[in-house]
Length: 220
Image (tube, rainbow, N blue to C red):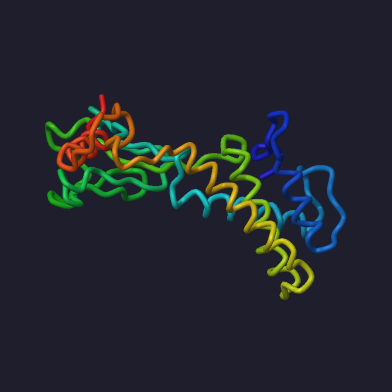
């Protein structure tokens, strides 16, 4: 906790500011620092913020999700290790049919019942979701997390939503804005065939499905 999670980019909502929003929601005074925090409510607010921040990312957004991410086999162990911030790992279901799964930080081969990869597997492409820290997440997402965490935190501390009902409205407004920005950034289009592909001039369902598969799992 503390400064390791606090935003340092000018114009961004810092974790300290988010903590103080949570404290304000229950009528507590703001704090000046997250280091060596002696105020119990401030520590609880920070933990709630980070909890909601992590929970919100698990669904996957355009900014923390990547398609066809390559994972290579370590030649010394014959295993595939995955970064600790990967929270979702999905190899091509059409090619592998659930054969490979993430267990801990290693990829497990369900068919051969081992972590050791056979020849020809590397690289293994998978759609992944990364867990990003506070300062690497979009401001619009952090604002929604702040509003939601304030409501969750208030309910845990006060045991009733009567004193902070206004935060439910703030949360809904922040979610609407988050979804609007997400739609713009994701640029979803059923006619273009998916990420990384150029739009084709006419609608062709068969070609679209082929491109969708290639674009999702076999880029590069």
